[in-house]
Length: 515
Image (cartoon, rainbow, N blue to C red):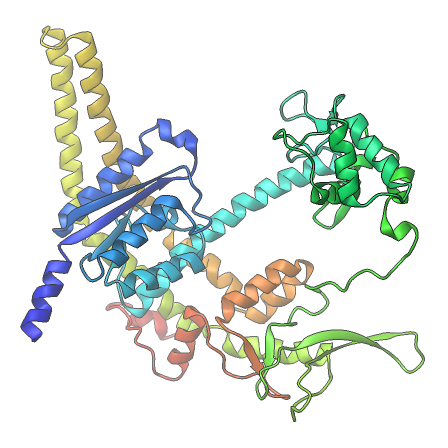
């Protein structure tokens, strides 16, 4: 039986599929897809694999796993379960921009007997290699977040100038690309009429939609307005010159369709004022819904209670387990101080940090060292291609190639040379930046309590940081925090402190840990 299993495993390892993608349709005119596919095929050939299928994604984002060709590739592996050994991608950041997408899909493929591999990023299957693999995905996600943050910052600057940066709302148009909106002479009068009629208090949204449709109001797609569209329009302050975006209300620098007085008369609050709804994601209570009771598993929430004199508010954490013995109101300061102490306790040990960095860098360098022969082969191929390019010029001079044949052959050889040089340059750049990337990451987790406190000014980042530390809910027993499932680096640190880690220090680095 064992011989049969080994034979099957040997057969499986001979087959693979390739998945390549570009992030925008602009890249389709270049050679990005062709280069990725060729390099993936060369990788498969070096591994002795036969390529069964190639899935090409043309201009769909890696921010989400919901991609057309990607889904086809996963389905193909599922239909050929235990028959495909490798799912080859050009780079991990070409495959996924979020760590969660990457780890989820990797587990799915693993269930089909298929290993996710990168053609340009050699990785190992040990604990440090797995951590390194996850870090590469985190870097891709971090890079994506940085790009999004820069885009958002640019949009925020434009919004501060009163410029509407999104698609024109019904009733506006943009005469000049990338400039501000102005009232549309065809639809703006009908929008104004809509507000004037609604202010009379005699219409429902559906009735008003029919009223406007009879007078010729149509959407950008030429359809009649729905009652949902009318409701959203009546509540949208853009029509009175106010931009309501990202929790801010900013004055627009464009001409409004209606006055602020007319807009206010159309709002429910104009006749009856009621309290604003409680904020679901309250920055005052960052651990809300993140910590659960160890006994009843109810999530902790937060609220403010008035003091005995009814003047000052006191914030507390608590949960709603009616019959729970651990039920109590815990002051916010006490609760969060205990959390900070817990973060300090689980932060990576300095010796672990040194060992982890040494092991990861050693694996990184050794993996690239194993590719020295391949790199040398690529360099020989570049020399051969340069000689071939010289022959192309010689053949053209001697008249063996026409001008058209010369241009075709020259373009082909130049593209191959560029691809080979790109492959070597990418490896060199990544190897050079690894120690810097590790230092950058440990700057956040070396003192996790300090980092958490510093993120107080940005609630969303603080919550994301919490979720990066713990892979599940954090439990609290009324006095101390429990032992949740930690993310990879923190978990390895725990094992290191308990002498359970499988991290092995590379040879010749023993002197680093004597201090």
